[in-house]
Length: 101
Image: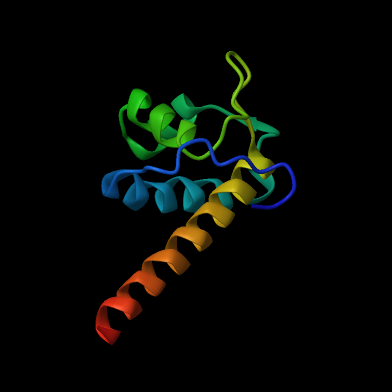
């Protein structure tokens, strides 16, 4: 993982893995309106999801969230991008090894 990135939970559900790109895309589309910090509740409300689900999903990828402050938006975007790239690479490698057998 990159500098400052901490993988909190290596075991992640398929449902969480499918939601993480939604959070990433939402934050990236904010453009110049991107806040310095963003909360799981803000993401949940924007995407019409349960805030507890979003909070748990983000906690599986990042330990940087702070109560009453949220996550540094740029850092969270970087962590999600890195986590999803690693997860996708691992998945593709696993699928390839299954086809080689």
